Structures are given as structure tokens and as C-alpha cells.
Image (cartoon, rainbow, N blue to C red; front, top):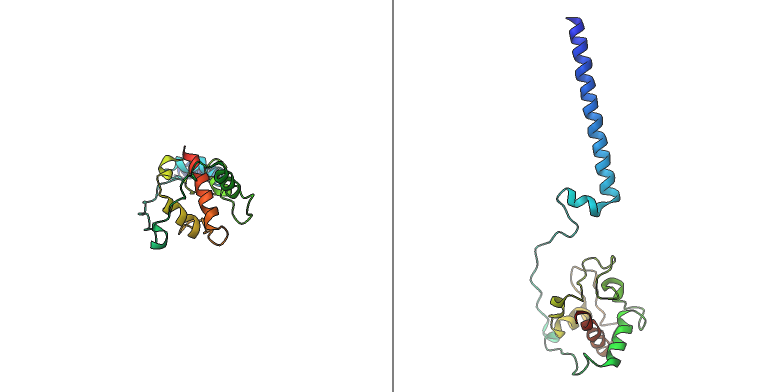
Length: 168
């Protein structure tokens, strides 16, 4: 009887240790993958960094911005677009660098993760008043801060005119 129980213990204990070792090894591999390659690892487990969050309704434009419109002819004026580009890229004013987050071509950079893609035609459907308000006051619960204190009203319209060229 003693021989059987010793044999049984060695087999069961040996098998249990092998299972435990394999489990620990698998856990180490998974943890390493998640730490060093999260973008590739999350979808394997049913997660994604880009998971869609429930969309909030767009906040109402405050009355002081509701009737704002870009001056006539500015959308195609080469001087306005050149001035807007200089502001957008941060060469005109070091306090304002839209390209840092929104990208040189209107496609968000890594720093601007979650920023709207300005080259998207849906983004271009926003009204002039909406864009003017967002640039002036910033966007709540985002990294986008307001630039009313850094840019004159004319400069904000120049940036908007330039940004509208991305969706064309």
C-alpha cells in the first residue's frame, strides 16, 4: 500500500507542478505582451484603445458665439489661408500650435489622441460658429484649450479658413 501512495503522490504532485509552471509561464508571456505591445494585445482579449464611448450630444453654442460667421471671401483668399497656416503650424504665435495635436495634414498625431480628424468631411459640417467657439473657449473634457487670449478674432477666423481646406 505504501508503494502505491508514494507513486500516486509523485505523479499527482509532478503533474500539478507542471500545470502550475505552464500557467505561470503563460501569465508572464501575456503580461509582457500587454506591457510592451498594448495596441496589439488588447484586441486579443476583446479590448481596444479605440473603443467607442457613448456619444454625448453636442453642447449648445453660447449666445455670444451663435451668430458668428466667417467674413465673406475668406475661405478662398490666399492671404488669409497663408496667415491661417502660419498660426495653425505655430510659426506665427508660439502659444498656439494646432498641428501639434491635429497634425500638419489635419489627421491627429499621437499627442492629439482623440482629437477630431479635420480632414473628415463630417467634421467640416460643423458651423463656423461652432468652430469659432471651440477655438476661442476650448472643448470641455478634452486637451483642447481656448485661444481667445492668444489670438485676435481675425486670427481665429484665419485659422478656421485654413482648417476648412483639409476636408476639401
